[in-house]
Length: 177
Ligand SMILES: Cc1cc2nc3c(=O)[nH]c(=O)nc-3n(C[C@H](O)[C@H](O)[C@H](O)COP(=O)(O)O)c2cc1C
Image (cartoon, rainbow, N blue to C red):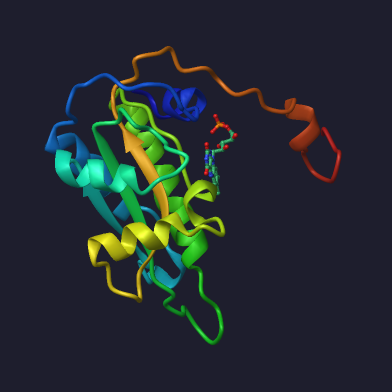
């Protein structure tokens, strides 16, 4: 898929997934897209756990209430570490955001759908912490996002965006020259 088709057709998919596994080779391509992302001072603060084992996937899903992507055949858990780039500067949020977007585009490019689930699992009820505890993830890593991966059963719907002119300007605020 052309890069601009992937960018422009990516959308947050929250529908059902087909009961078809994602081949390991595709998961690896998606994960490698995550590791290829830029990171502040190249600190590479983001790590990834792909979950496609049916039993573990069911255990992880059971910890998520209200549930998300219950039919997805694979999840990618995005982990971050607070590693300082210099002085008090830590770019881990920017790092994992870049990695997530790279993976979302790779997912789209390979014909799958996904959704960036972060707010849902990092809210006060700390679902991410429960998953990390269940999986024995070391304390210095924090799960910040889940990306389901799978073939959609429903037609993905594009999310509307504000008009070009309201957010994009040339040569000055509000400009068009
Ligand atoms: C930081 C961040 C956190 C998000 N958390 C969630 C979430 O917890 N649940 C969810 O359904 N969507 C979540 N989303 C997806 C947004 O709702 C979605 O990107 C936005 O509505 C725009 O739609 P689009 O992705 O289809 O362009 C999150 C997106 C970002 C960037």
